[in-house]
Length: 60
Image 1 (cartoon, rainbow, N blue to C red):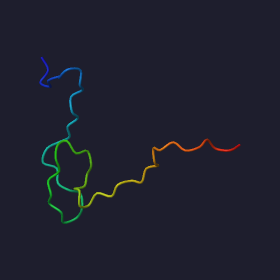
Image 2 (cartoon, helix red, strand yellow):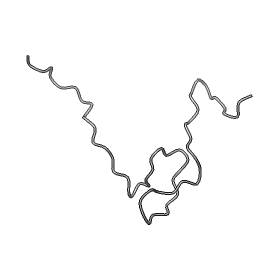
Image 3 (spheres, rainbow, N blue to C red):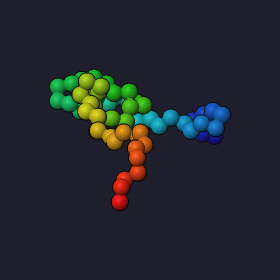
């Protein structure tokens, strides 16, 4: 039997190792086991992603 409960067709949440600290030098903030990032919210720098708003098709 698996230790992960499956609820009504949902996938189990992905978890990462416990006890991780922020990778920023001098920061001792502990990262949640559900957070995949190496940095805490204060030191995390999000990557810019393109907008998901469809625009007009490109002109050939």
